[in-house]
Image (cartoon, rainbow, N blue to C red; front, side, top):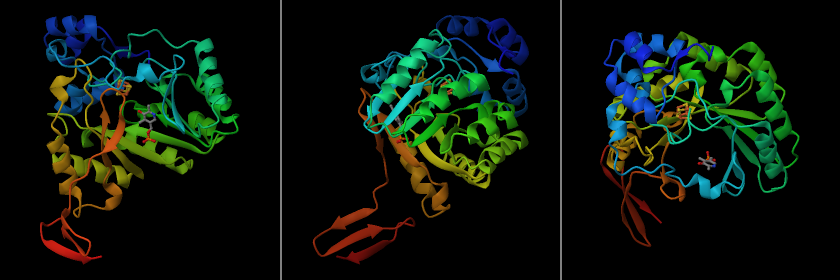
Length: 338
Ligand SMILES: *Cc1c(COP(=O)(O)O)cnc(C)c1O
Ligand code: SF4
């Protein structure tokens, strides 16, 4: 599934009938990969998918971006671990993905850094073993689901053996960009290691089709809670109606909206960034209009390694010891007596 894909500018230009020169220039710095399934989806759906994975010459003129915007390297005791929050650790098990998203926070390594070796995985497992405070291991990358079932099981089984680890989470984009990867054999393997959680990544309602619905159904039926992370992207989903539609459609597939991420300050992605006000307007629009279950937390992952902070619209108008005045989602004022 993964080997079949487009990684050369010539082929991509030919497939999508676009100009080759700029693809070539960008690709020398930030590689291309689009699997065959997603390439066909781009041809059907158009701009909302195209812009996420097809190189843009603006990637090369970003003056303000940072290679490692979350300073992950400062929190990385061994190559494949990022340990920023006491009770949780990121375990990066792959440096490649089923598509290379142009806005990726780990653009510095996706398709560029060499693949992670067995000894490095073992170092990661030993690190988790020797840190009893880690209760939640997030297997991520790159995309862990580009690995074979055998390799993935080797990793998961070793993490599951560690007594102080309560839950294992897998962060993946294959559910939206290569849903066929969610095969019965994968599900049967994952089920053996519960509690397993999966966080998927959808940015636009156009990513959802029958195959995607089926993949989400399989995961949920296997007792795997599925959460979704969306990145707010200029010109793709920076619109309250698009986000509200996406969140409703996710819920309908039993996928719980988890985070709406403000785009990070990643070098080469400036053209995707929106203002914080755009995100706040989207959350305000949804509050009171769609099910609370459909509303994700809007978060900014602070540059320099500050960690994630939630950004919430302010409904508190006035506050004293005696009373608090709120505005509601319709803009009317109400008083609560303390
Ligand atoms: C986002 C993130 C986590 C997980 O945070 P949750 O809020 O628990 O989903 C863990 N480690 C790092 C480094 C992260 O960036
Ligand atoms: S699938 Fe995730 S890790 Fe891979 S390029 Fe896209 S955003 Fe980055």
